Amino acid sequence: MQITLSGVRVEGRRDPMLEATDLAWSTGECLLVAGEPGHGHTALALVATGRFVPSSGTVRLDGAAVPPSALRARTAVVDVPGISEPDDALSLADVVAEGLALAGRRSLPRDVTRWLEERGLTEERGRRVDQLPGVVRTAVLAALATENPDVRFVVLTLPDRHGGEPSGWWATARTLAASGLGVLVQCTRSSARDLGVDLPPARGATLHEPPQVVLREVPRAPVEEAATAVLPAAEPEAAVEPGVEPAVEPDVQPEVEDELEPSPDPDARAEEELDDPLDDAPHDTPIHDTPIHDSLAATPADDPQEEAR
Image (cartoon, rainbow, N blue to C red; front, top):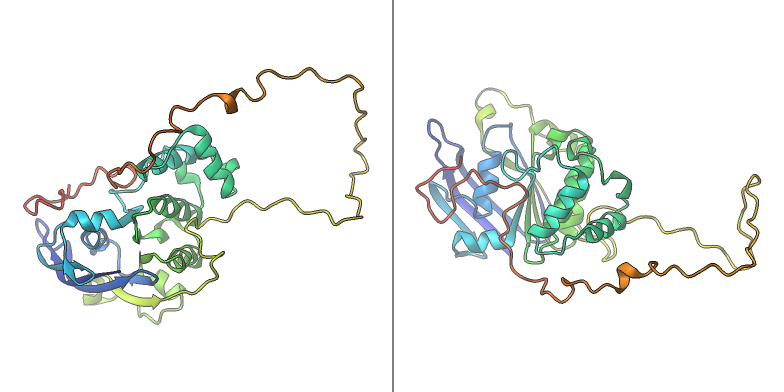
């Protein structure tokens, strides 16, 4: 699949929110777009995903003009400032629960616990999202966005504003692309240079240029590495070779086995035996793909007369 922007421009109340821009990105590729903050990143992310109607120009899906709702169903915007970024006061567990719910997944406490365990983030569940390292924050939000199986394109907007090495969030983007998604990453020009792009500093007129495509990759990775979940799974326990006695700490004494049989715990499997009323509920009920905390200041894309808040 491919999304193509031709001469897309977004007018603002005083100045243009996005100057005329051409862009094409396909599933399976990773696109890096660089520009200075405040010069079109948010408008580009919303227009490219059908969440805002451009003042001029066209946005096509596989070469055909489609309604904005069709674009929204196939795309996700991740951590867009003021649009889809989570509230900094929320804990990681809260963000995961909300992200799973928005993706149409079950989001009970045990589902959140399982999701975090699979990615080795159990100890981080109580931390505020603004306390997470920038790379971890981006990876978590991107993984939650791709929990929706209908999503084929993902936009990561300015992950460098949270700090950390650009190579970290670029690796996340490449992993997503290797899994078959189309990934558009928006960053500053300095971050693009850190990734090896030969890009001069912005001066004069270039300070106001719209974001420009500076790098395009089609990453190839083994199937086991191209997982949609971009965070590493928890490391399994080390296996013990046959015939080799496991090492025992010298100061730990083996426990003496109690000769008496312990009384069975009647509540040991209570939770497992309880019927979950949601187990039989359909999990593929379509849910509007409004991103996390997306009060979407932009106008519903079907009404081009209104502007984003």
